[in-house]
Image (tube, rainbow over the protein chains, first blue to last red):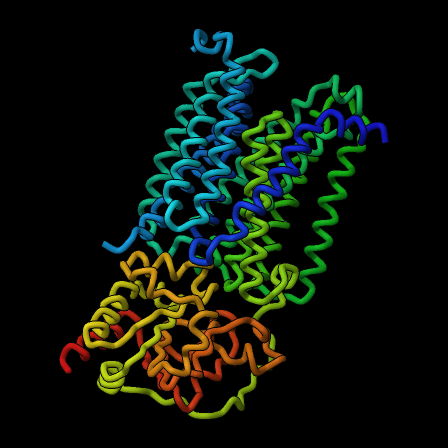
Amino acid sequence: MEQVSDFFLQNREAIFIVILSIFLGIEVISHVPAILHTPLMSGANAIHGVVIIGAIIVMGHADTPGSMILGFLAVVLGTLNVVGGFVVTDRMLEMFKKKK
Amino acid sequence: MSGISQFPYGITILEITYIIASILFVLGLKMLSHPLTARRGNILAAFGMGFAIIATILFHKKDGESIGNIPLILTAIVIGTIIGWVIAKKVRMTSMPQLVSFFNGMGGAAAALISMMEFPHISPELIARTGMANGHVLAILLGLMIGTISWAGSMIAFGKLDGWIGDMRIKAMKYVNLTILAVLIGFIVFVMTRNVTASAELTPFIYIMFAIAVLYGVLFVMPIGGADMPVVISLLNSFTGVAAAMGGFLYKNQAMLTGGILVGSAGTILTILMCRAMNRSLINVIVGVFGGGGQTNEATGGAIKEITLSDAAVLLSYSKKVVIVPGYGLAVAQAQHICHELDKLLDEKGVEVKYAIHPVAGRMPGHMNVLLAEADVPYEQLIESDVINPDLPNTDVLIVIGANDVVNPAAEDDPSSPIYGMPIIKARDAKNIIVMKRGMGKGYAAIENMLFFNKKTRMLFGDAKNTLQNLVNEIKNL
């Protein structure tokens, strides 16, 4: 019980953010027309590439060869997620331009 | 670099950048859900990401220590950017779903790697104070588990969509999967209740957990039918979001937390919307009850009738209203451009042409819209199935191009059919139906389609692109 309350007090801001973000996520996309489902999924896919920040932090403090390799890999994969995600989404949306 | 990192307001700038990035993510996602602003929304979110990355490299400090290994980090980013860019630009439009799945997997893998590397470094003071049972450890373990499942699952989904992994349907599968999931959760409890002084002592367990999570990811996606892949990708997408958010917990990083959770919740809603479009529950999809089932009534009876190209050309040219129902076959054959040519040609002849778009036609919701948009078919011609259905009895000819399950009347007639209850395009209401198909194979859901035996239906066999090309030529020569 003590641990639970400790955890809660330690992380209350984070818990706050999590709860509000959940509502925000639901609210933001609940009126999306079906034609945008694919680009939206792809855009959201790019946004969770934010995990790259964690990869940079972990790599930035890596000191052993093993952790350097893993960290390097994590940054490469994270970048793939970010760059690939945004570029693919843009490519999809480019096609939605109004008819000339 | 040390000059910049010693800059006294570094941390402030970093935190402000994270707030800006979070705002840009939210705005980006919001704008992505409107056709007119979607593209700008995507670019906005990308800028947010760029700011967050640059600020992290410049100003992030962990226990007063700046980010090191900067040349290596930059090299990794350059490599990732080049590969990501090239793949994203080169891949054909039909392979989009695979691509999203692939990039999603990369994010999951990155999250898993972060957890693996952070685990041995959990501070001994924290462990001395609370033991292994604390939020920090939980975030690492969940990040590892969810990230790994997302990675392994996405790779399988990628393979399935690309056609080199088949479906594997074994009845006992769901029990096996539930057992593995229970084992994974048990593992987390096990690690968190160990009495150790340093987390590094438990590192081998982390690798075992990784292996089990890979197994779960693979087995989780294996039994799910190819037609359900969009739902799975969307679900795995939200998993990766949650895995990224675990990293946010770990580093008390607001950008990761908001970005991750936002995608986690938006992804879940999107998944549910997709399931609803197919009139199925998420559980139903995950357990993989779909396909193969239903009664494979061989006595479906009725003969199928073929139509010649010239008959089809005449029929179309002298119609008033034509509705085209595109499906994955159109995408595979890359026939969207020639299809648009057909509709322009008919339009010149005074025929009203519309496209009936089923929400789950193709391999991803909105897949058909993207493809037809690529071929410059204007929005206004793309009509959603609910809207066009009442109009179908007045339609002279309905052309089904490479679609199957979305026009299958079994969804309305046959309670034993696995797709029973799924909203469909009521193709059989049209006065004439032409079905373009490669052969008499069943659709993705592997169920018989009575529409093909309907007395109003005539078949035009062949590759969609060639058939459409021949049809266009035939109409021109009339």
